[in-house]
Image (cartoon, rainbow, N blue to C red):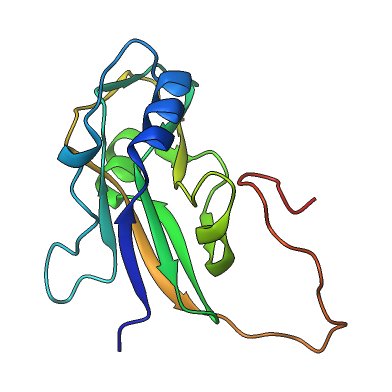
Length: 161
């Protein structure tokens, strides 16, 4: 069953986000592969780094992926570090697990998935442009009894506060 589709964001949105977050590097949006699974049994869709990244111990960076995802209602995309980077190098997501809701696709930033990573290890962490660095896993979620929700998403991190 297919419940989602990865897409690239617009060139304009990518260039704006990239210039803000990685002003000293140039990335080409159309050279960034869409996320894919490594094997037929893989749950995670690997995301590729659009830049060369050096993370010093304790350092945090936000990485513009160039990717958005159209997700059916009732599902969520969860973002995790690739296990090799977490286990070997102590790379973690700044928010522990990234949650990409189905309505994020329509956010003001075109649903651009920006990934916050941190080096919790004791050595510099090097991620080369084109390396797989995080993975996304789709999961179904369920609702509790609640009042109806009438607010709408406009932005990304913390936008529903």
